Image (cartoon, rainbow, N blue to C red):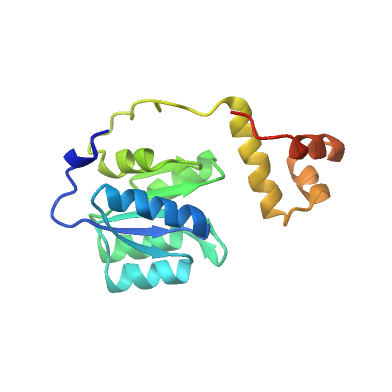
Length: 183
């Protein structure tokens, strides 16, 4: 993708809402390189405050945040600036949440881990056509590993609780966690 050729329009304001601070910083830096004027928020409350005070033209909102649901930020932004382009990100790609996000006003819905190119394509897409497949998709083993790691972190690194939630044997999970990540 040619970063110089992006047509962001007159207003380049972008709100990023995610409670994963490292991911938020990386995405903010990548989106600034693409010409966006980025504001970051790490919670629903902070995202709603920015959406109310300075509603951006674009927004990328994580679905699950520590203090609530990212769809609350989408609703606030939709009420303040109906024409804004909003992409909802989540580590939990489920059809029900995708439908809820789109019904509430999200422009698109992407499963994590999504890179800056995927996010930019979703934000700037002006047609109902499907986006092109990713250039370098993750392997199925990598996607599985990422999912297991995410659930493990959400369970505060508790192996027994993670195994229960993933419906797998605890020892199997321990072996998977002891290995390096697949490519």
